[in-house]
Every structure is written in C-alpha cells, then in structure tokens.
Image (cartoon, rainbow, N blue to C red):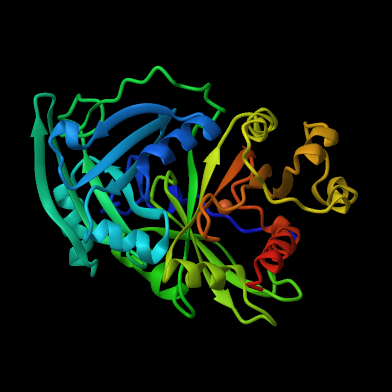
Amino acid sequence: MATQTTQAPEKIFKNAEDFLPLNGTDYVELYVSNALQAAHYYKTAFGFKSLAYRGLETGEKDYASYVLQQDKIRLVLTSPLRKGTDIGRHIDEKGDGIKVVALWVEDADKAFHETVKRGAEPFLEPEIIKDEDGEIVRSGIYTYGETVHLFIERKNYKGVFLPGFKKWESTYNPKPVGFKFIDHMVGNVGWNEMNKWVKFYAETMGFTQLVSFDDNDISTEYTALMSKVMSNGNGRIKFPINEPAEGARKSQVEEFLDFYNGAGVQHLAIATDNIIETVTTLRERGVEFLRVPATYYEELLDRVGEIDEDLTPLKELGILVDRDDEGYLLQIFTKPLEPRPTMFFEIIQRKGAKSFGKGNFKALFEAIEREQEARGTL
Ligand code: FE2
C-alpha cells in the first residue's frame, strides 16, 4: 500500500522553539581513494561543476579536497596525500564513502552546545577559520557509525567555499543533469539500533518522526528491513534510518554493514524537476540503475492512478512511481557508485507526495536481490 501518514513538522514546532534551526545541507564530504578521478567521474556522469580545491598547491600537506557543485548540492571529495592517516584508514575499512554531512546554520557555536548538552558526542569544538574573504564558524558532532555532522556558519564569509580553499577553474564542465537539491539522506544502522538513532535525532537534534513502516510492509521472500524517517523543524533535512530485519537470507542493509564495516550513509536522494530528462542524460553518460521487471508497469496505473507522464519513457528508463495522500512521486536508484555494494544515489521528482516510495520497496528489493545473487552475498 502506498498510503502513509505524514505530518507537517512546521505544525509541531509552531509553539516550541526549534533549538537547532537548520537552513539546509551545506555540503556532503566523501573520503575516496582518488579524489581527482572521483571528481572527474561525478562531473562527467552526474554533471557537477568544479568549484573549489585544497591541496599541496594551497599549502595543505596532508590531504587534497576537490569541491563540486550542481545547483544547491555541494560534494567534497577528499583523499589523503600520505600513508598512516585517519582518512586512509577510513577508506581501507569502508571503501569510498560519506564521512561528513555538513549542515548550514546561523550559529555553529549554539548548534554545538545545544546538541552536546542533549547528549551528542563532540567531534569538533567550535572554531573560527578565516582568510581574506572573511570567516566561518564550524563545529561538529558524531552521528551513526563514524559519520559526523558539521555545523557551518557562513554569514560572515564571501569566498568560494571555505577558508583555505581556492577557486577551482576548469575548462571541463559537462552540462548539468538537472540535480536541484538533496531531498533526503538515508543512514543504515546496525541490528536493533534504529530506535537509538531515532531517539538521537529526536532528543539531541530536535527532529520529528514523519513516517514509519515495519518489516511486514517491506519484506520480500528473503530480505527485510525496518525504516523510520526523521525530519528537522522546517522540513528541509530528512534522514530516513534503516536497520536490517530478520529474513530468510541476508538483507541489503546487512550487506551494506558488512562491506562498510559499520553504520553509514546508504543513499543520497537528489531532487530533479524532470526525472525523464535527468535519467535519459545519466544513462547516456553511463550511469547504471536498478531495473524492475517489465511486469511492474502492467499494474502501475491501477496502483497509482492517473499521472502526467507517458508510461513508455518511464518503462524504458525503469523509473518507479508511488502515490500517497498528497500526490505522487517518481524515483529511480543507481547501482552502487563504488566497487563495494555501499553508497548509491536516488533520483526523485515529487509531484505532491511527501513520502519515500514505500509502494515500490517490494519490486525494488527484488531487483536488489538479483544484484546480490550475482555478487554471491544474498
Ligand atoms: Fe530514498
């Protein structure tokens, strides 16, 4: 069933102070083994543009970071320059993966103290960093696994990204693919840990739970998971949290945890205004997506009712559709973006729906299981 209960978080906070006001996602930083080549891949395949750089040429001796941008999304790709670094250890244990989910705040000092006061484990005490373009204040706390949230206060900064970075001029900038902003970011956490992290986002960060479904809703013959969605006060930040559930064989969340050696970000869902155009371009550029069987489209309109799009391109591209009380959404999932079956992207276009495509989970999980079967990890 596609019906879900959604609550507007604004209503909940109408009379209560949001102790952690968030303007949005500031950037997402991945630790990768070859940031230069990864940057080329994200530019070529996904249409990001070169924005900023930090490395040997800017006086940074330990690591290099390449910053890419497309509309409101900024990706930072970081590699160590020497052996024996914590970044190198992270890559050894997890492969390429997301270390930092940075959140844009008005007051990074307050964000740190309000969350640490409520039990967050400190990662970075508030600090001011500056260059000739001004200063930023940043601080950070741990979330699940080794993932961290940095709070970035940039109201007194007019530089290209952060102090210490220089503008990255590149003559190679493939056309954007229509990515607009990060719709949601999903974390996979360990067995029986979902509620611990739901509580963390609720009590430590002031988030609200939006939707809940249990393993009866989203299990297949073999695998299952449980998921809850946490949203901040203004609804701009949404973090679904998955944990594995008992199934006959290994679930995709468990497979992630094995290859990532712990909890971490499973997927970034990226919003587009025209999913058919976006996915057509991505496929031309070699991006591979999970495919559902053609039979999915036979019953689609019975399940979701009338939609604006023609069925033919949706079927050709493998785009999925789901409906809730408020409208519908179109979505598709890439295959993992690195050799390990860990992080991937979702592309999503919302037409009123505020949910996350629960009606597609069964078809999707069966598609994932076919991939797992091929990897020998089911
Ligand atoms: Fe998603």
